[in-house]
Image 1 (cartoon, protein in one colour):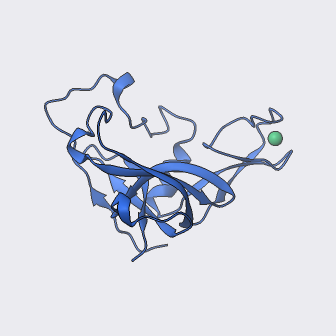
Image 2: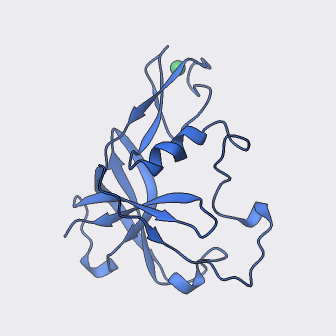
Image 3: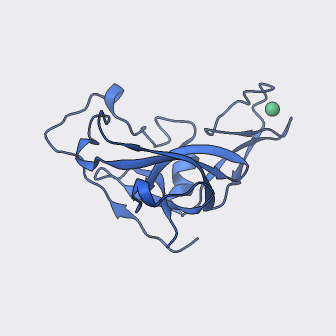
Length: 154
Ligand SMILES: [Zn+2]
């Protein structure tokens, strides 16, 4: 942590996305009650919410526990290193704005007791192995929003 390695990513400028087709969520406090997730991400912290009532670790971060409906939740760090649990490669049919990235890897990452789906960067499908370590990678959109991916550890 503390070793910021943001990488700018570009979306084609000729696509004016209606929000419903925008893959990335609106992240500010005005638009989401989990804006803390994105604030933490900007500080290299990958976090989610944990229920203080029943102890369930929730993903994605929530404002109400999906298990016991308590809203007594706390933010917890999941760490920045995980293990590749499963992976695949997207070769076609990418969502709007992602076609120029094809082919790219996607995977399930075991981190902090959760299984999280994400892009796996710096990797070719042929080189990935189940069980290998991957680390958090934070990418920044041109409009200032950020999002997470994972990448291979060389
Ligand atoms: Zn609960």
